[in-house]
Image 1 (tube, rainbow, N blue to C red):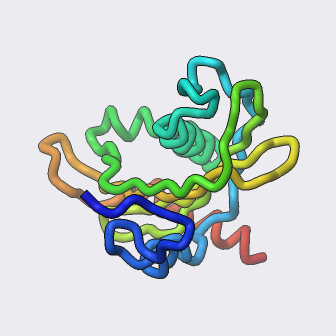
Image 2: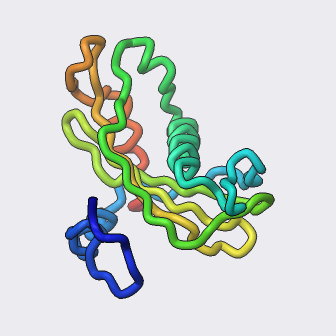
Length: 169
């Protein structure tokens, strides 16, 4: 196990912060998309009264659904066609606690699209104060029915290119 993180530490498990935070600095392929504000439910909190850490990853997933709807991507159809996208990496940096009853917004944007993979970045904000509560990213690999990496579906590439063209105008 690594050394516990302290305020004066400049590493996490011997990994320099510079490396970890450089993983968050990608140029965006799409603009930020925001979820509708939602309220933290009591069931999402832990014994300390703050949102349980794993729920932030659930909120990332919900934001990806919002992203797909915003870009008219039918993810259910892609899965039925045999090309789901598996999460292969996830990272979340917690900045401030969210608590029961807080109103939350999750922002998502695509920052990378390669042959068989894509990467999303996220920000979780307090909807009322716009305070950054957490930020992170996920990397996904498109797979076929046998679980082997496959090319990104063409519909995804088209939608991202359309978004880039509209975003750059």
